[in-house]
Length: 286
Image (cartoon, rainbow, N blue to C red; front, side):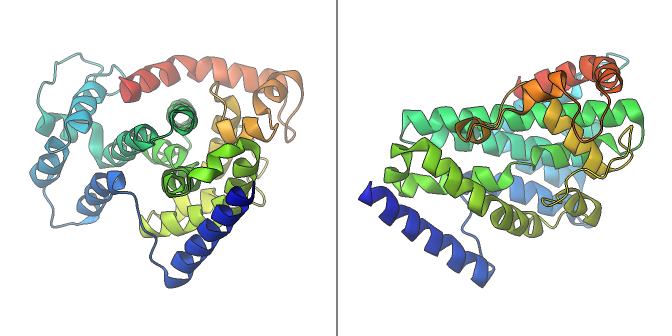
């Protein structure tokens, strides 16, 4: 246990130093995601130049084409088989989200430890679940841009992904998952905020990550923060760190009133958006 304490302290000091310097050391698997994001934000970039970056990552290329052929984004069924057309069809906002989803999936496979890979895989599935619900709810309600909602939903656990990826340098941390989950809960918010700033996300997305008061109370959800709150509750796949800490949100969703949300109204909203959620989940995971 002394090794756990020593490595947790060393990891904390490393993260604190990087936050103070304003330079987080990103895992290499996030490089493509950052490149896509920066190109998408550059008004001088062309869709062809962005597509060239996507083509350099085979998994991202395949998933971009698959997403472009999803009924949600291709209602007329015209088959798309090339990356350039796929990028144009799904749009830059969805491409940003997809690029991060692919990067996060690769992060989940990078750990030397089988146990930590399972945790990372569970975290990835939870994030994709939240992102898919976010997209489907926004599309159904028409109060928030669906692409923006999906990107925000995918970024909900970004701090946890970062900490999990960097933990591979501190192997003693896997000796006690509950204590590691407590460690992650301490650093998740400051690390998550720092990463969101590095990604230079729009203010409305940054405002959605209000850790102290995540739900404003509007029903149906009228802004991005409230929509992400509902999508996080609706996710069928649990966050493994929440599970390790004994936080079980999903049963509460169906057995009691949460944040003043009436159960019958919530059930009706989720039922209406479920088909869209399942299709987007398949598009991102396929």
